[in-house]
Amino acid sequence: MALVRWQPLRDLTSLQDRVNKLFHEFFPEIEGETLSLMQPWFSPKTDVYEEDDSILLEMEIPGIRQEDLNITVENNVLTVSGERKHQESRKQERYHRTERFYGSFSRTFTLPATVDADQIEAKYENGVLSLKMPKKAEARPRQIKISTPTVKQIAASKAA
Image: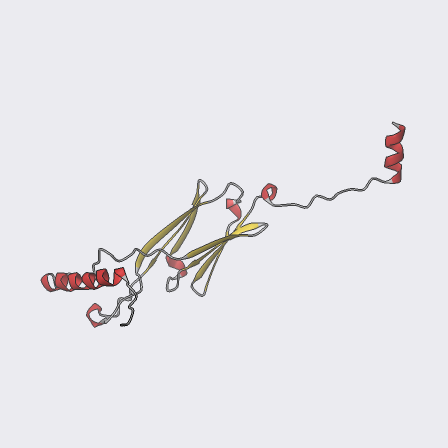
């Protein structure tokens, strides 16, 4: 007897496909993307990490043009939004499988008070949006030097 790994969402996905097919049989005039109640929304994967002088954010958003991205900061809330557009030149009925997500997205991040929002830099390369958010000067770690008293300072403190 072979063991088969249980995948609870497999049955739901199969049910979703059957409901979608039934829906399109009854309403063939509705065009556009496949309607789905269970399809997750488009939410790009994001890494946020900290360095001594800044906080860095990297978001995977391949297939989105730079012009279709919007980055705003308001009241210490960073918002990255955009849209991945479906290619209009392809006919929907020709697709055998659609797994990539299309449509609008919006991600918000609360910035710590240590970030200098006026100095945020954005770069978009190879489908990855990178934001460098410098820390305010007073929030950056600094090295404090330990001073060694000189012979004159020791003599002056003994005299006093």
